[in-house]
Length: 91
Image (cartoon, rainbow, N blue to C red; front, side):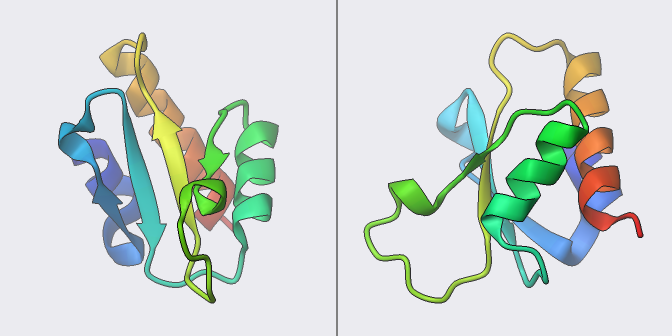
């Protein structure tokens, strides 16, 4: 959580911290849709998932991304968050 706050700050909110093996990153706004965010993450070597298939009602909402961390070490999690931040927010 600390790494997400440090690197992504107020650009998104984190939901599902107590769920155990994943969190949902909900963007406050983004010019990128979920498909593009997933594509950029994959290009950076990080696998994430769009949340749209899991919503009951899609509508016109800012993107949310499902990020799993089960089986990863704290260092791997920090590295993944760094890579996502660079993929999504660097020019």
